[in-house]
Image 1 (tube, rainbow, N blue to C red):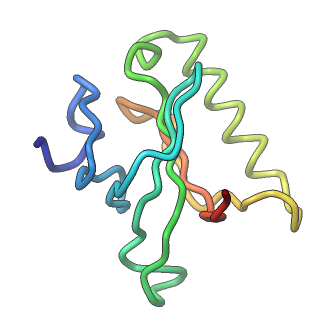
Image 2 (cartoon, rainbow, N blue to C red):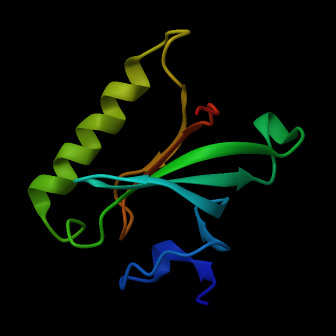
Length: 111
């Protein structure tokens, strides 16, 4: 299994235990046309508090080299930064300029 920071691995090999930003990937939650979403651990928690689960969305490795896909992902991050609603998981962190662009939001358990 490959471990270590994903943002330094352009191959895009994603597996539990890899890190993206400060988040450690735990398990895949889903995959779609733009990428994949993982449950991850935030080791520092909110403002240095207790660790907490987060959801990390990664742009697909095959799209990371496509300027239009990267721009679309950056627009998604910008839109999420403007949304404040009790019905939308808040954006916690993002790096739209990483080798594999990603965003982290609050994790909301579901069925």
